[in-house]
Length: 109
Image (cartoon, rainbow, N blue to C red; front, side):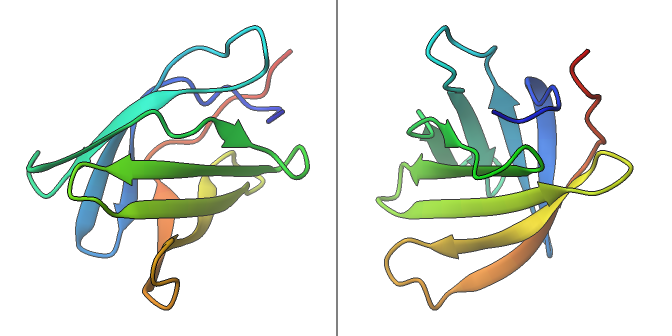
């Protein structure tokens, strides 16, 4: 699992789009769930399908949006604790964008 505390409300800065994200506390099975909104609240996302971590510095998740699309987000923590990554539509994956978290995340003790 991620070695940084990502729970709480924060934003994904994705070009001219700001995605507001809320990550709920880690569940006993090691999965995060959350909610998201963008386009001035006209598109909602929830569930995230959990969060998968390839290694301790990576944080990946999928948002199922209310308009029927699914966005995959793949990020890595930089030295200051910010997440930087790429996102793409699951179908079609050719639509991509880069993103950065609005805040740095602290390490778990």
